[in-house]
Amino acid sequence: MSRRRQIYEGKAKILFEGPEPGTLVQYFKDDATAFNNLKKGTIVGKGVLNNRISEHIMTMLGDLSIPTHFIKRLNMREQLIKQVEIIPLEVIVRNVAAGSFSKRMGVEEGTPLPRSIVEFCYKNDELGDPIVGEDVITAMGWINPRELDEVMGMTLRINDVLCGLFAGIGIKLVDFKLEFGRYYTSEDDLQVILADEISPDNCRLWDSKTNEKLDKDRFRRDLGGVAEAYQEIARRLGIFIDPQQVEAQ
Image 1: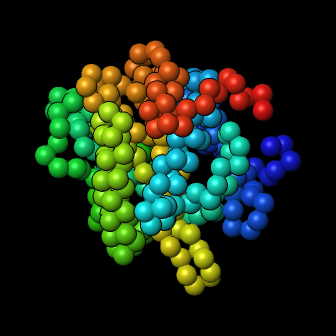
Image 2: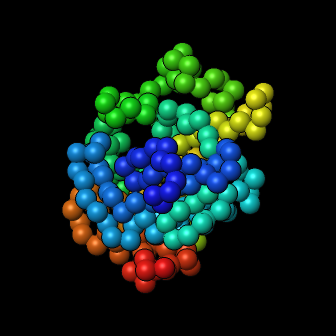
Image 3: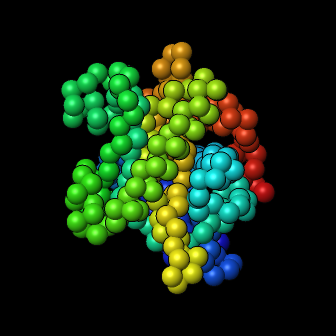
């Protein structure tokens, strides 16, 4: 890892220069943050599990013709990905009231929503990632109307796919966050594709029968058993590998 040129370091991942032009290596850390980086900690093995879970989901979405930045998993903590220009928006899909939505709207957590709700937040930690509307998004030039339509279409399709995937393993997809980027196939040709990751870090996942939280809320709310919850997601997906056994590889 020290031989590569570091491009960017975020809260949960590090990006390095890739082996070929237009590629990056995405490294998954064990670091955990919450509340806009005010709460920090470490979840041992989280990076290994998120790498596997995101690989599994990104591969499935790609097989369903949903374009993503994922190319292949390189090892237990790294993926080879396409280099994209990240659109500065977080796209949040809500199927069940929870978290900040419940607080803002005065809706009891766990209340099923009459339909899936898509919200947009401007990616800016200093401003607290404020919620923004479509008019603001296009007026500020973060995304144009055609790209916004593409993002909305992909987002709703991804929600349908993930709801079905998780329902099949006894998990309720409460809400989740997506990020998208512009992938330049040539100087004159670009494509909006799914970027970042899909894992218990950016999804709320509850057991369908008990509503037990199996995601980063266990860290946010000091519920304990965070690593075990991530392991349970991987186990139900059929991709679990004990991080402690592979770290020496």
